[in-house]
Amino acid sequence: MPVSVHNLLLLVTEAIIYFSVMVALLHFRRRLGLGVFLTALGVMHFLETYLAAVFYVELPFGTASPGSSVLFAGKLMLILMLYIREDAATVRQPIYGLFIGNLVMVAMAFILQYQVVAGVSSGAVPDAGFLKEMGWLMLWGTTLLYVDSLGIILLYERLGRRFPRSSVLRFVIAGAIMLTFDQVGFFSVLHVFLGVPVAVFWDGWAAKIFALILYSVLYAGDLYLRHAKPAFGTSRPLADIFGDLTFRERYENLLAKSGRDSLTGAFDRNRLEEDSPALINHCLHSGAPVSLVMLDVDHFKLVNDRFGHIEGDRVLRVMAEQLQAALRAEDSLYRFGGEEFVVVLPRVGHEEAMALAERLRQTVESRLSTPDGKAVTISCGVATGPADGQAFHDLMLRADERLYFAKGNGRNRVCGREMVP
Image 1 (cartoon, helix red, strand yellow):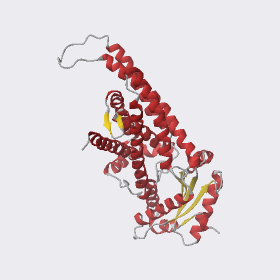
Image 2 (image 1 turned 90 degrees about the vertical axis):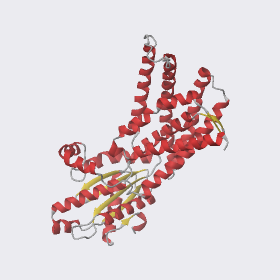
Image 3 (image 1 turned 90 degrees about the horizontal axis):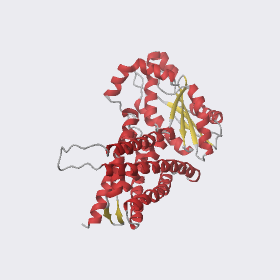
Image 4 (image 1 turned 180 degrees about the horizontal axis):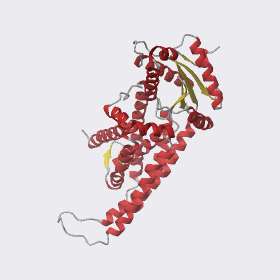
């Protein structure tokens, strides 16, 4: 096997391992904590910069560094994924941390070079100059990363106006533009200060684009798993139950203070009316659709009358858990009142919202039942802006109308705009 093909296979293996592990940490951030993902992202920064400076391999399309093609390209695309699932404020945290940490590293390297080193090991000689050089490279790389992150987020949002239904295409285009920009910025420093030949610029760019295509395929697979299989990773581990028993009082106090419903853990109606207008306005002004799903438990009064309010509370609590587990991280679940809930779906068109509402309906019917073994069912009404309105109250009105149309036509069904006469 040619050396270049051998190196390419190893490069692909490295990329798959790195991206898959990081996406898994991002997926389970609610259980493990976001800090696990951010720490794992940041801890690779030194290796990434070191490899980009001195470690190059022959590939079928030229000479490139795994540091740039695998680690940096992967980091930038993971930052975009973090933005898609969280927000811009969360994205800034790892970048600020890296920037400040690298600045301290440069200062420490400057001080260390004036210390007298004890000769403990004859085979290892400290190189403070190399440490300081790496510190400056990492500082420059982090500065570029900050610009890259802002740019890729802005591009992703702008592209939403042209490709509102294709998250993967926006992922690819925004990544290609910003990885090209970064290649120019970082390679310029390598060329001027480390003498890396110009030919490597094009080879490195090709390797980054190759990695981007690979990461985009993995991103598309992640989207499929999260949307087509909402039950993925939803079973409650023993640790969750232990946490409920140990921290219930503090947890409920926290929920009460943060705009959450203390029974179900969903956001409450006040939070819905505070957050949703701005979110809807932001989506529509950026050219992206936004959908609302209003849902109601069918015959809920009979549950309370036959089995008591304790059982009714259990039904609502377990149902909210099942709904939350089936939603994306960027979606929001609110308890509107009684047995009514509202789901806000940013950047989701009507057809996709109808499909998601149907999955919610099926999830509840298949996994939740009353003590006599009868399935609990829900009815859903779906509205999507801008076609159904450009304001929060307009979308709520349309969703409410469709919810009651669904309940009046047999219950246990989803109703959208195409079903209402």
